[in-house]
Amino acid sequence: MMAKPADARIKGWCPGAWRPMSTGDGLLVRVHPHLGRLTRVQMLALCDAAETFGSGLIELTSRANLQLRGVSEATWPGLMDVLVEHGLVDPDPHTERRPQLLLAPDWQAGDATHEAARLLLARLSEMPELPAKMGFAIDAGDAPVLGDVSADFRIERSASGTLQPRASGGLLVRADGHALGTPVDSIVAAVEHLVRLAHWFVDSGGRESGRMRRHQAPLPAWASESIRPAEAGARLALGEHSRGRVFGLPFGRAPASVLRAAIDPASLAPEASGAVRVMPWRRLLVEGAENGDEAASVAGLLDDNRDPRLSMDVCPGAPHCEQASVETLGLALELAECLSGRVEGPVHVSGCAKGCARRQPAEVCLTGRSGRFDLIVSDRADGAPVATGLSEAEVVELIAKRGVR
Ligand code: SF4
Image 1: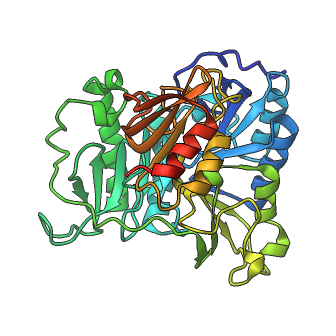
Image 2: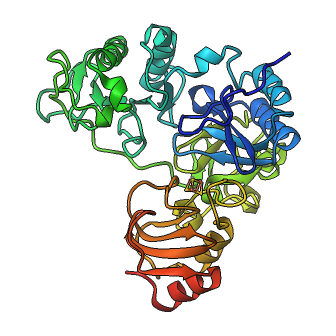
């Protein structure tokens, strides 16, 4: 018999499937898709599992993980059986705690990103025990696209003709918080260098800091900071893509039924795999999705890159989180309708001052407190408010009237 998620009530760590987090609406079970891709069969299994064992809501995180909400301690064992059976979770809980790999979503079988990820996965067992939130970005396409995504060490394409001639292979390995990286002459060397950096991180006391960006120790002499990454590329835009179609998830979440519709055979080209690539920007790429006519859009998913629901940062709020005294999603929806042209810059709706959905300042932030909202301008969720004790209607009226610039 499968054990209960015994540590489900411990907070403050990075939840996974074997170590789910207890939230206001039950356990939160996070799945790290292998190479950031799910086959159509896996995606269907995940949708079914979300409805059978949880609330049916699926979220896409800022590090391209999928998470199911509303799972109970009673349904969790059955969920784990399904996830393991479909290769969505490793049967060994220890393996799940290894650092997560985030791949540039446009990778192709055999290219540098895919090869580096394959080699690195094979060497994860050699890694020292790293803090749970650490992760690696494999971003070796012509133009790095994961620069705005949290990762501690990165394999990237180097810029040519910057500080030194482009190394053979044109790859570098870069530590988070450092603008320049170390050139390497092959994919194998890149992986070797990254493994070595992981050991250095631990040996130099990095566990105390938790993440590379916060680690104060100077990089070792063998990890020269001598070459700049290639100019950043754009994140994949919503709509037509050479492999299929990119869809956005409103506020990074969607019911399983909506995601199932996106991979319905009727919306796929003949012979299409219908596999799904997950991305960190609330986007999914459905391989082989039809393009070019009305059938291409899916009700409940976003198609317009300017839709505020793609960019607003909104935490789950009440009743999904025990810390929240307000619902966040209803207000976020109302704001999405009235914001256009009134607010330039990021908008954040937070159930409490902790600000889980966004750590940086936002142009406009609404923070829940004692069942009402505080309005904070150009600051974080815990910043000083310019107005307090607002109802949802008052927030909307205020923003609609004056905007915030
Ligand atoms: S910001 Fe507060 S309410 Fe929102 S998810 Fe985090 S702890 Fe919960």
